[in-house]
Image 1 (cartoon, rainbow over the protein chains, first blue to last red):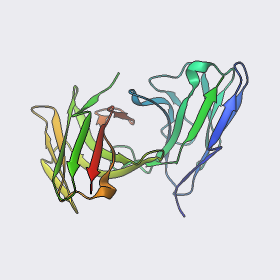
Image 2 (tube, one colour; image 1 turned 135 degrees about the vertical axis):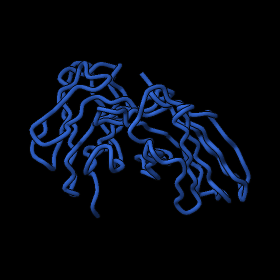
Image 3 (tube, rainbow over the protein chains, first blue to last red; image 1 turned 90 degrees about the vertical axis):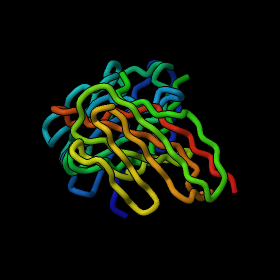
Image 4 (cartoon, rainbow over the protein chains, first blue to last red; image 1 turned 60 degrees about the vertical axis):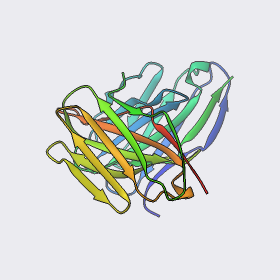
Length: 113
Length: 111
């Protein structure tokens, strides 16, 4: 099925460990996004890539890095995980921001202990 | 910072009743969107309304937009138990290529 695929679905990390969250879309969308969702906070934008070859910071970028590997893939890296990064992470994509809605992946539930 | 804020935070109704959720925002927008999230799942896009539109329909959904009041409402008619979910509004600010989400309204529809 066409859509946004995120891996892994669940992950437990120890403080200080690193990991990369993977996201791939097969809809030929131009723009891709990483959000985190915390209880009572709604969704907050971490980083985004408006088009292949570009990335920009969102509202809460500290502690994260991203790579737009190609048009399909947009990864999120935690270099040194902290308990404050315990959250559910969602990747999303859209053909054209401002004209179309976003398609979301099913999320990665990350716990940092 | 949150651009959109939904009201109420939680809503509990019976099947067959209508559900109305409201969203207020602060700055000029290109469009406003509504999303649904079932527990533990990703968000699903429901409807997009542009800043020059006042009302839009999609099946049992009706969205209104009042740019003078910087507010929008989502009406779900003849609610079903399957409509139980969290509903988020999101705004696409003029000049930006990102969406800012509110904190959501939790809707519970009881059989």
